[in-house]
Length: 321
Figure 1: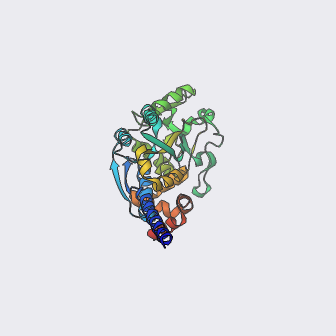
Figure 2 (figure 1 turned 135 degrees about the vertical axis):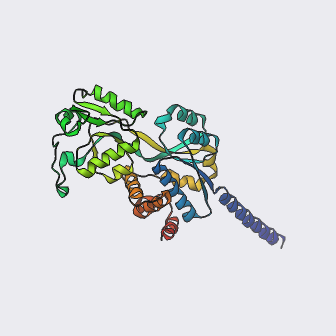
Figure 3 (figure 1 turned 120 degrees about the vertical axis):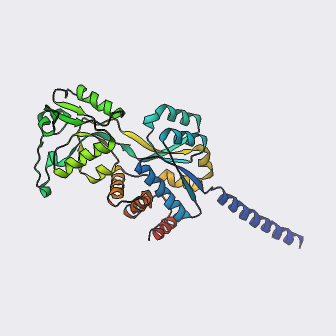
């Protein structure tokens, strides 16, 4: 009888211990998350993709989005005021980034998207034509940057008609200085003048205006952007700038208390083309960042369902309906 009683008590203790053990495992996931909300659209959308999946797929999560510029938000990530940084373009602040990684304050958990391309672009119809729009190719032999001198007259500079015009970016941008130097280094200074539009908006408007008129255009741009999601532009070989890494960073202490979210973030990965398309849809349909996140989830289901278990994916689909 005593042995039976001891056995029953042991089984009860085992069950109680197991129950408390499972509860402790569940409680390890802290469901409050603070995300860096920088000023560009793509990171705003990625933040809300993550929030939508975690809130609707797993339930119980609460997200705060802290707006700001790169430096203060990255400092917040280091000291724990920010938990997740969905788009770190850290080649732009490499010394500070390396310090944070080396100190163990921040973890890089991998790319959000492939390294972002940037360089000099032209409309595809300039090289290949566009029969649907009745546009003939005006530079069919433009294969690399070395061929540009043959076609300077296509983009004749109104202020200096003896040369062509290359839009190199607004004043103050590092890439503007780099483009100006490229014109010299590539031996193009006898054929082209650099032109500095007053802002990034003016740069994009120049490209869009030329494209809508079916006219030639040469200038600096980068991806992912809404403009290159809407327009069929191609980069001129030989004008590529070093591509920029776009990675997901998390605060180290945060990573220890959010195992479920970390598991998804480690699998989170998108393409440049997807980012271009979602940004174009955001602009064309006048969507806010939350609306653009839902557009992404509806249109790229094959991508995000690879990040989460099947039951979580079903919950997200149901929320999207």
